[in-house]
Length: 90
Image (cartoon, rainbow, N blue to C red; front, side):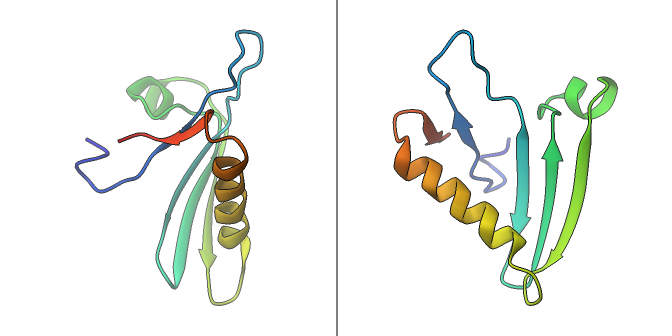
């Protein structure tokens, strides 16, 4: 359903059974605004509705704050530095 909506999800695989990358970053943005959810909730019914999770919702004016640009740069660097472990779900 996410792909049908035009969302471009990425996955991080730590390549380890003993190390798990668990935080989630959900971001929607255009040239002027950005909306982010940073936290532990999986994008599942339980993660979004019934589990006990911790998340922050952040709204950013991209004309006044470069916060989302930092998140995009970080994501791009992970993709470039770890191409076998960070990939877009298609």
